[in-house]
Amino acid sequence: MAKIILDPGHVEGYNRGAVSGYYEGTAMYHYAYRLADKLRAAGLDVGITRTKITDNPSLTARGKQAKGADMFVSLHSNAASSASANGVTVFYSIKRNADKPHATKWCNELAGLINGGTRARGASTRKGSGNWDYYTVIQSAVAAGCPHVFLVEHGFHSNKAECAWLMQAGNLETMAALEARLICDILGIKSSDGAAQEPASMGQKMVNTPGDTLNVRDAANAKGAKLGELKDRSLVEVYGLAGNGWVLIQQGALRGWVNGKYLVEPEKTFAPYIVRVTADALNIRKGPGTNYDVAGCIRDKGSYTIVDEQDGWGRLKSGAGWISLAYTTKAGDAGTKPELTRILKLTSPNMRGEDVRWAQERLNELGYNCGTPDGIFGPNTDKAVKAFQRANGLSQDGDIGPKTWAKL
Ligand SMILES: [Zn+2]
Image (cartoon, rainbow, N blue to C red; front, side, top):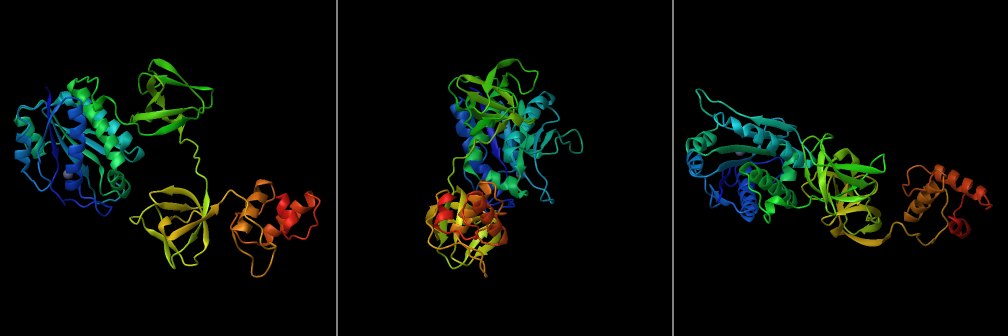
């Protein structure tokens, strides 16, 4: 049975990330156990250098545990003073040249996954003074006689986007499946039932090609042999990403690589709806959670249209950001025609409301330009109403009463 030692770097609470709550030494500890589950499912004997989250063995002691193992992998996330630094580096030993192609493939595939595709900084060695590996943990594992030794930097925790990506359980699950498969490939393990051979689906995409069909190939480039074709607008499951933009997909029994530029997000079926804010002051944030920056504040207890939902947060149609739906009540579907309870017309100050917004959207759809549907009845809306009335044989007073409303 092949044996591997996983070495989650550092110790609990060590190396704070750009997003509050992330610590490299804590995150990599939990990740090591997730990866170990996948490897054990594929039939490997897995040891972990930290048996408790508070363990912090010396770098030499960590490497020494590689004695008798077929592979040693030290797990890290990277940091730099520049917040924009990003990407994946896979280090291997100056004494293990044969590991270079493995490290290169690892780097490319991992970079293709993290944060939807980040920079592949490459396979690297680092030499200390003398003929030694700079990284003590690599040096010590090689000295113990281990044939495959790697230190993997899983993106930058000093980069806010990559750090946030590393905090999502679903991403870690997919990353563990990918790394388990890479490890099994290096060790020549072909498990028929192991989780490592069947990484979790990364979700669905839709084929969007200028032609009628998209070729599926047996390698991640245009020179790969053609395995079959996908129909335009059909859905596929995504199982992996190569660093060069090619994507591993499956549709029915057909599994292979396609050029990722011909895959798009499936069309969303989300039906927008209207909420009424119940809090006196409700923060608008740049993303769906309190860990995102505040972009504004709603103080009018007004009605707002929600066009997307995530984790109990709703995205505002205006583009201003996201609000917590816990402080709102649902007021109706945005697509349905509201009841007309007043005559809508140009007044000073301007009339406002969802009824005005609905009329603006409908007029725009019909080709009478009101500008951005903002729910405010201004001069452009007045002009559009008059043009609509003229074209429909209604009296051109610019007022939306029951007759105009019925025709809209
Ligand atoms: Zn580290």
